[in-house]
Image (tube, helix red, strand yellow):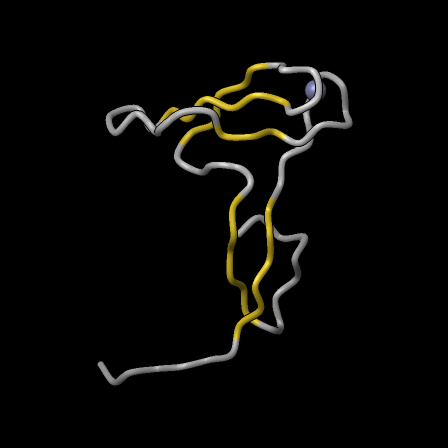
Length: 72
Ligand SMILES: [Zn+2]
């Protein structure tokens, strides 16, 4: 396969706290390599929540023609 290149845009993906609706969830531990669980806490109300495989906040890259609303 030949090398392919394309321009992308950089986006930051955050998760707003399900409990207070204001704070951003922040990763507070390392991912469990077996289950993929990553512990997070709300930076405002400390509401704990576990996400799998993908931490918040994180930096993603998407194509220039892709919508930032899509769950990539
Ligand atoms: Zn909160």
